[in-house]
Image (cartoon, rainbow, N blue to C red; front, side):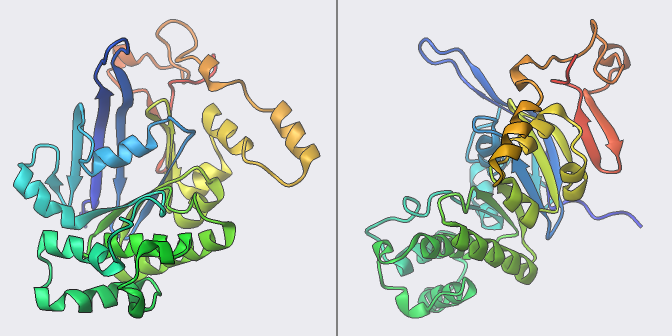
Length: 317
């Protein structure tokens, strides 16, 4: 039986910001590839500046890419005409990081949730308020609040409204960019539970971008680790978390804080060197796994287990 294609397929995605004034061109994302199956969550982790958000925006075609391919529902997005891409946006949506700035302060909740309905003409005008009520109930909010303004709501409630806005046009795929980082711990747990519930109910696929490794483990089926714009390790959530193979992944996990100060100090003393000193190979053109990619014509990526891969770039010498 031939396996069904992934809902989202990203291949060799690169984003370069052009030179500006005294600043040279900057490669923010380089050769990123991953798949997301229907109903699956891929967690994307890495330190600030590693290219996670740029990757998410590029997948949604909100950021111009330099090269590569992005396919959604087996449709190539990167070469799609503007009008067709606009129609495809109903299948892919975005949940932003900051619930305090992502809602227009002078628009009621009903007006905010009606915007995508109007843009995509997904329901008749007579059903707008009915659909808004359905969306609020979907995220466990009282429809009676639809005529209030954002200032009347807490951060967690605002994020629920942001999620409702993303779901207004029944998307298949949602990019969640740090959706709980601005919330307190209790509210984070509630939003994570909501995302779980919505995924099961609506068969959604998520690209979940976050710094919090514990939350990524909780919500994701697979995880990709980014460093300097590249994916350096990728695999099933238990594969990567229980057996991190790349030095940067190991350092990232070791840097997660723990409650015992003495243990934390010991862990920091045992951490591997800063990734900036990690090299691309051992000797000459031989990679860290003993392969000469220039001769073999292969990429610096090695499968170390079923579905578990690691880059030989930035491996210690």
